[in-house]
Image (cartoon, rainbow, N blue to C red; front, side, top):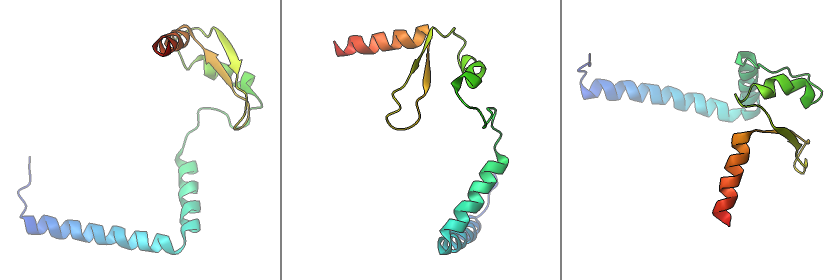
Length: 107
């Protein structure tokens, strides 16, 4: 059911909302570090991480990694770690097939 509000009412309502957002933005700009800390705290409080944060290595995560795909993992390969910690990549039949198709495009 559509509301048949006059354009002036809609515009006035949007102007008030925009003004409120503008005011919040200006206030946030006065102390961005505090706003970012508050936002980070809210995100951490509201997030639900299915993976434990205290794992030591990928072996601890292997059950979760195996559940990322319905396919059986053929093998794992360790990354070089050139931009951070080394990671283990699970290879499945379809991942290998996609690499094959990609390489065929290049040849």
